[in-house]
Image (cartoon, rainbow, N blue to C red):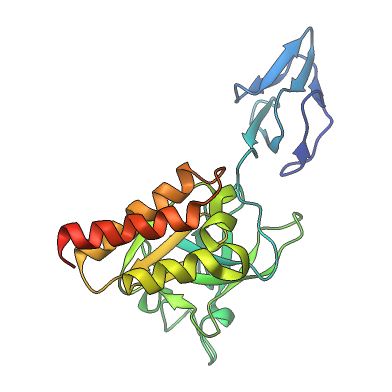
Length: 240
């Protein structure tokens, strides 16, 4: 018989004991077994599922470099599923975002006569704000507010969430430089997704390449000037 020492969605560190016993199914390469004891080998988010035969399936989603939501964060999410009164949103995190109809519409909603697909459908990208998150439940989102809502144009760039502060820069210096030099609108999500909306395809490609350059060289000094020169040289080369 299995003894489980962790709760679903709890955070574990390397060396933490997860479970003991024979009725445990390991669903992760980040779990090590010694005898009948199971240990975490990485910092991560635990998944625990009791199966019909009474056994437990345990997994770990690594948190290294993962986006952990915080209230007030701006995120760019992808609608993955639709319930009766809410949308489930992929926010590039171990946690899925929940967007309720109250955080979309300013009027009463009756699921018996109306459908959420009219407002947001699976596959839509949204710019949203995290309004609540305490790790006891999935983060709650809103698209009410200036600059929030469904993405209707532009391209999404994905980078490591840990590189987002470098893309923003001190007091917004880097992202403001990107917009000035390119003439593009840029919305940076704290979850590692960036919305780029440019006047033409060439400028969009230049900005995307610039963002990838920032991601690759985030640890170096003098990056702002190098990216500025990169944009100017690419614009001159392409004639835009």
